[in-house]
Length: 388
Image 1 (tube, rainbow, N blue to C red):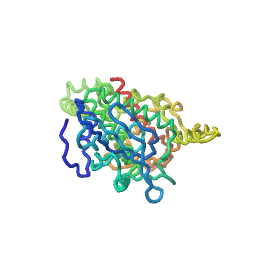
Image 2 (image 1 turned 30 degrees about the vertical axis):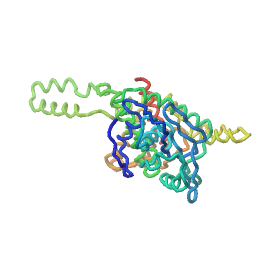
Image 3 (image 1 turned 90 degrees about the horizontal axis):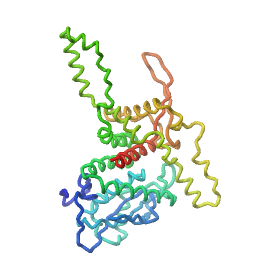
Image 4 (image 1 turned 60 degrees about the vertical axis):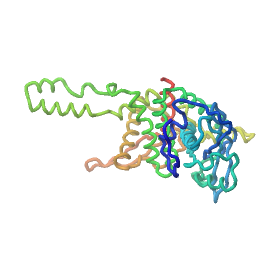
């Protein structure tokens, strides 16, 4: 196991958390004492999640000022840990956030790892580390239908099985991408563009591994007649050699990203994405005797669905997603979404006026919403893992 700092000092180095969450070689300690650590969720977990090595217990709900609450879940940590148990739950928080598509945190220090019962002071100290808006515009939707929670548990079990079975080097790579997805959910409210950027970045290392460069290189970029001219024209040959060198430096990551999505999370799988109001519908169905909530998640006349688009249109949309990511990287420029939260299931449409050489024209662009990109990141990484 990699060395970790004796005192983490309220800072996270995620590379320390990766081997704590799954050691390269699992060795169960003979210590009979059960240690604990804590997760900070943005919803009320109403049932325990019991897995092979640990248990996530139902949340303690803490009322803070105004409409803010905190949700603290105690975790019975694995028996291979005897110190720095919070590093395990930081790794677990990333995995849980990846699966649920919701922000999840864990304390940056392990001051509460050994206590079985939290006193009020400790509860307050944990609660202020992740306050959650529970009512009003922009609230987190803290009460989930039991069906939604059961689905979280099922999907989490599937991912844990994969993470604990794949080769360790691959596990490290996947955990880094999972962490980027978690950071996307944690940062979305602070900076939508950063969250969007992180989702795409989470897929990039997997995409460049899964889709080789030669698969997307256009063999016709250098025409045969150019080669013929270069045989008799030294200056032309030098220019052609320089052009070839520049082409060889191009990693074609944008094209590889598009091909990766089309192979590992094709548009026909996008229909597995729940409608953003799906939990409200299910919650009404579970708590009301009047089961007439189907209209909430029906397709509206103004919405665009994946099957409304052809293959070229889908590829163009995905190319634009990567371009928006690159503009944020190099210019700090946000993607053109006007709202961080979409009530549409898949796409938003934005209109603007564009000036080209003094002429103005109206442009409409179709944008995958944040929920869809998060779903594509999650599903594509899971499909890549399953494919082996």
